[in-house]
Length: 210
Image (tube, rainbow, N blue to C red; front, side, top):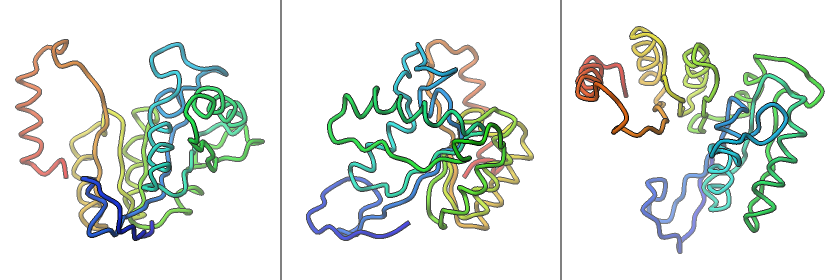
């Protein structure tokens, strides 16, 4: 994380105060469909063919709101394919959009489920981590990121138990970090929306969210 001064910068973005812009490093943990759009050796055939999270971060870097970008997965041999995929689906389409990133584990490593820890060590308090990994890993990874003092965006479900909510909230308060859930849905297709809203409100009252 670093500060950049730009007297001419005019934005409603909360990271800018009086021309002082907060520029963060971003680590994306999870290299699958939502992050990269690259699955099983090719672009996914869903509406996320160019990825969602990485594309957003590349654009934020283009706006000079993000500095270093890191991606951590479990299979390093995927990364040459991901880089080629980004070149085709992003750099080859969006002018001047830099798609370079640091990857963990190395391209020669077939499996390392803890590679994200080396990437976390590259970050400073106030940097940002996104977690788009299997559901049962969200809590442990997010907790480690918060313990590093990083702010965390987690794919739904945020965690799996109420106690995990409490533990993550306590760690975030202690470290001065924030975390949030990222998802997209069409509420008109949901059933039981009033009950969902009631339970969400109750959880917030119990301190499960920050």
